[in-house]
Image (cartoon, rainbow, N blue to C red; front, side, top):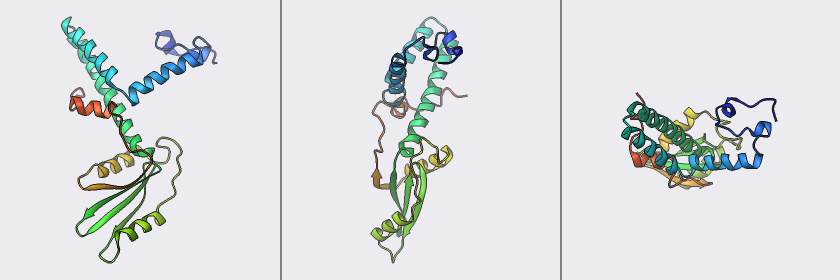
Length: 197
């Protein structure tokens, strides 16, 4: 408990568990619900924003509808970015390969960090190149979301992973996106850059 609650309590946006106004278990339920909305199922946020925009438009409150649209677009962009970054930042190891002419380039990514690269040459087999990659890879431990690497590096790695011809060789952990998460929602509605001038 702290001496006084923050401004969010004063504007009715928080139950203030910090001063005992709301139980920790009740607050945990609220945060779990929002975590689910932001990380697993973004549909409710999309639907509520769409309904609010429609209501405001019917009432000819177009400027307010634009504000709702823009807030939703910013939230969707931020949640999609976090989801995308976390997709590899949480993986103990991801090994990928990409053909480069007659050779294969291999990369080992650990917790979002480029741990090693290697190339199979005309005299090196793919299996030998992969074994060498494992041997030379940096030891990277999980220290939390983006604790050992910056988001720019992770985004560069993601762009490489998503480029044409990149193949997954090995995944340690789960490399997947929720069916109704923010990234899939953004793909469903098309470009969400429309609101950012």
